Amino acid sequence: LAVLFLLSILGRFFAKPLLAQVRAALVADIDTPARAPYQSGVFIRCADHGFTCEAAGNSVPPGKRLTITNVSGAFDLYTQPGQAVDLVLEHGLASGSPPPSNMPLVFFPTFFQGTDSGVDAFVVNAPVSAHFDPPDYPKIVLSLGANNTTKSPFIFALSGYVVDCAAAPCAPITF
Amino acid sequence: LGAIGTFTAKPLLAQIRAVLVQNVDEPGRTPYLSFADLSTCFKLVPCVAPFGPLPSGKRLVATNITGEVFLETPGTILSACLFPATYYCFPTVQQIAVTGGPGPIGINVGISLFMDGPAQPSVFFRSTSIFEFSAFGDQGVALSGYLVDCSSPGSCAATVH
Image (cartoon, each protein chain N blue to C red):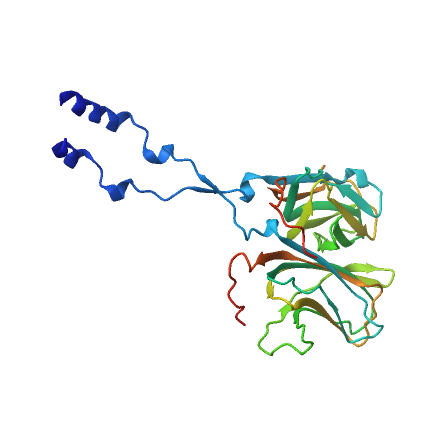
């Protein structure tokens, strides 16, 4: 009995704590953006003096949900008085009908970078948070001032990730 | 023993700790940070500078680009874009209205860019004047983010476009 008592005392002082013996379990998150990224380029060629033009990305694949986290791009406009630019990321509905009024628009600012040979250069880079379910698609809508003329096609990169709503359930998007 | 245990054993509840987990995709465990030296762009316009190549089987998630470049004044960067990504451009900021000598232009932007190895990212600058040496002895652009391991079959889905 004395030996057992002595061992129990020694054990209390010399044994490694249980927590220190536990190694971290390795886990992988099925929704890690890098495992299922989305990166798409869209082009917009506005007609000269066009007021509004748009470019659509591809439809979201069945069973997936697209989350766009960033919009980036660059474009040039011929220098004109009364220049105005309005850039919006919108929901494109596969039905072709206009989006409901409560569906959010995502605006992003443009950065004027400078003028060269009568052309004004603009760049866009904005973090966003926009979600799309199939068969809808993202689209960029560009509105210009009355005197604006584009020099070349506008180019934008949409990036984000997709989650697999078949592997784990996705709640409906709340607008 | 029962009597001793009663006084010396910790209550069961006190022995329970949270289970430790380690996320294989934790950014801090596989960071990426590459510097593109722009001294090779001296007197050039436009300028292209490469970052370090990506290892095969890895996917880069670039989250930030920062740097400083110097142009002959008056001059400005009209567009700065990353390649071979799809038209991924970012703004630059004129630091000061210098009227002579090299003028500094700053960069610090959060980005969200994916690129699979063995691609080699590079940065392209379109400017209105030639690149100059830095007044402070250094200039360049740093691309940072993290890598995920896609070497196991099925571990990474193809990028959706």
